[in-house]
Length: 90
Image (cartoon, rainbow, N blue to C red):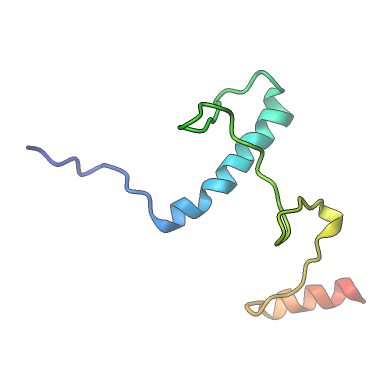
């Protein structure tokens, strides 16, 4: 039996990208292809129904819009990032 040395095995990093890839696909479906013209459709394997739109939510699951989100420098911010936030708040 021959082993397929080129089989893709998704890593944790790859699985973490899944919602980002889906969000990009959904954005393209809305803003490029247009409703009903999606080049690829995603559906739930068990039900066969389309998947829901990827949303940004708060801890309670409430969808957020950009004006409801605050950006702040994190623990890993370098000097340039800290300076950019300082300029933006001045």
